[in-house]
Image (cartoon, rainbow, N blue to C red; front, side):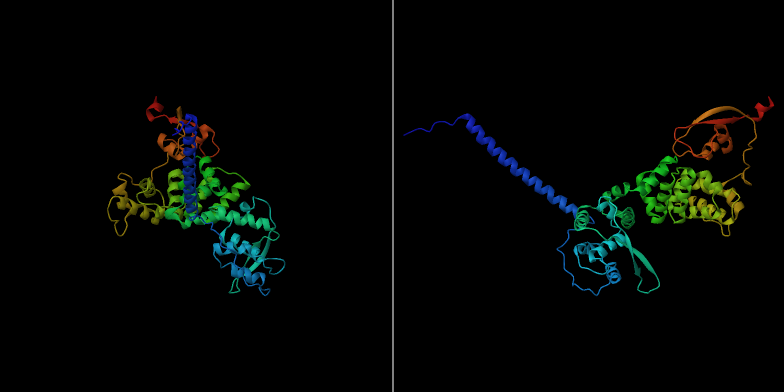
Length: 413
């Protein structure tokens, strides 16, 4: 009987290595398949859809461009995507896919520019008459697009999670206020509209968090932020006055966040410069537990304002004290309750008192000239004059010279 010779150790090791490589390859394929599965599952939450095979519509030459436009304007987003492959002719050289694309852009804010890589496309207009015949709008169409461009549009719609313009992203954020998708916010962060607002606040000396900006914008309408963006594109303006104007626009839109930001960033402006109407808006929109609301109410209580402002400010103070406001309202009683010792509006600091020593104040987040003036018991005009300031805009880290007054004892000496 012939004995089997032992295998060469190197041959045995080669067999083991080959088996290990086969097992490793199988595991890698399994992991890759699992990864692809979860990616595809995540895609189900995007706006883009897996398009079904094109359903051929009955071909007819009786439909006019306007009739097709009216019919397509009522279709949902996904149905319009399906019709981007419909090459049937209508009138004047237009095809049904042209009308579908127009409706996607006009009524669903599809980002055609990004889908086509930013290239310029031809634009024309078709009037769309309301069924009641009383009004019409002009809808843009994009004639002359080639087959490969429609394929690019379809590919973009299928692969991009948020294939929308900035305006479309804005409406999606407003629609999903309670559960905003992080990827939706990240897409809007890249828009020129978000950049315009964020830069205005940061460059005007009052930076705020990105989420606060989103919450603020969602409390207003698209026109307000679009108008700001266009004006900043024409002429950059990062002044305090521009920021105030923007927040006042949102205040008039009913934004509580705008009211809080106005008070937090510009106390002096709110107390001294706002109209009674705007002050009542702020008091109505502010939460009674918001920071600085008690300060504002007390300042208004001793200011020469209308009776409605006095009563509204007093009602906040009574609420914070867990007391009912007297009926009828008595201003003298409110002053005695919340501002004891104040019988009339305090006199302003006399600006022509002699000034001696000076000290420095470094501007910090939330500082304003009025706030600094109150801290050091001088006037805003004195700070502006000593520091040769042309506006109330303060840059973070700037050193301000603060004038100090002589006391009566110093003057006698």
